[in-house]
Length: 163
Image (cartoon, rainbow, N blue to C red; front, top):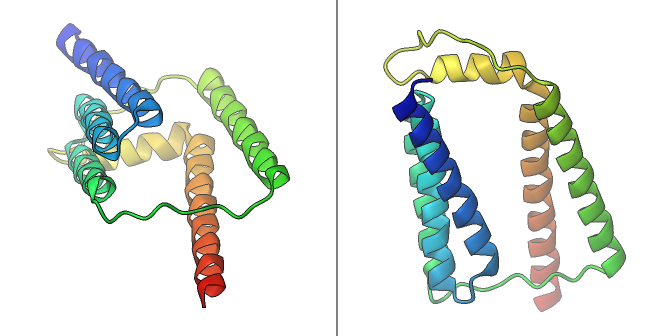
C-alpha cells in the first residue's frame, strides 16, 4: 500500500473507532445518530481504501439508514426482561468471541490478492475473506445471527406480554 492509501486507511480506521466509541458514550439520540454516521463513513473509507467500492457504498447506505432510524423521535427502546445471569453469560460469550477473533487476526497473515473482480473489486475482497479470514468471517456471521435471533425473541416476548 502506498502512502496516500495508508493514510486514508488509518484516518478511516480512526473515524470508525472514534464514531463507535462516541455512539456508546454520547447522551442524546441525535448525537448518537451523528456518531453512527461518522463510524459508517470511517468503515466505508476503509473499504474504499481496500478497493472495495461496492462494499463501501453498501456500508455507507446501511449506516446512514441506521442513523436515520436512531434519530427518529418515535423510536422506542427495547426493555430487556432477562436476568443478570443471562446478561453475564452473554457478555462472557462476547468476550470469548473477541478472543477468538483476536487470535485469528494475530495468527493470520496478510495476503497479496490481485483485484480482478472488476472496477469495484468485490470478488477479490470476497476471495480474500474466505481464503484467509474464514474463521473471523464465520464468527461475525454467527454473531449477527445470534443478535438477530435474540432481538426477535425479546420483541416477540414483549409483544405477547402486552396482549
